[in-house]
Image (cartoon, rainbow, N blue to C red; front, side, top):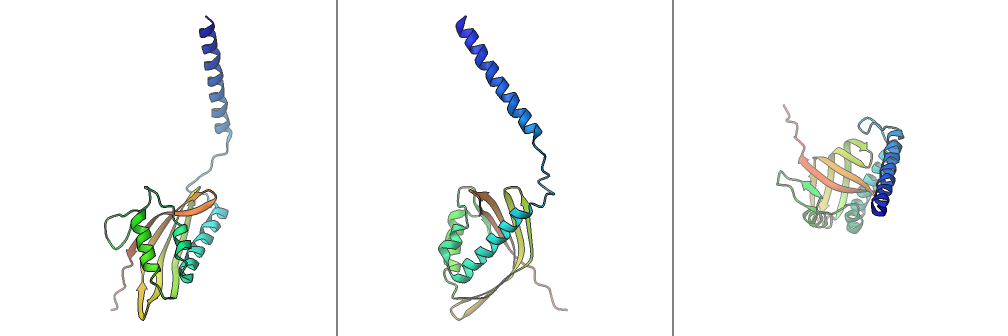
Length: 170
C-alpha cells in the first residue's frame, strides 16, 4: 500500500511539473523565425564575416580556421565536386589561403544576410583577386556560408561555392 501511495505521489508531482512547463511555454511570445529581422544577431554575423575576411587579408590561417565549427555535421560543396567534410575543408583552406602572398581585392558583392534565430546564412558574389607569388587568381563565385551560434559566437558549419556564370559580350 505504501509503495502504491508513494508511486501515485511521484507520478502526480511529475505530471504537475510537466503541466507547469507546458503552460510556461505556451505563455512565451511567439517569434516569426522566418520574417523576424533579428537585427542585433544580423550585425554579429556581418561582424564575423568581416573578421573572416580580415583574417584572410592578414594571412592568419589559425584565426580563419577558428571561425569554423568542424564536426561530423560540417559540409562543403565546391568546384562542382561531391560534398566534402570538415577535414577536407580545413585542408583546402590551409592550402589555399596559406599560399596567398597578397590579397589585391576581397569584395563580397550583393551581400545578403538572413538570420533565423541561432542560424544564419550569408550569400554573396565573390570578387576576390589573390596573388600566389607572381600569379594572380580571380575568384568570381556564388557563395553561401551557413553559420550557427555556439557559445555566443557565430561559427561556419557549411560552405557552398559555385562558379558565377560569366556574361557573354555581344
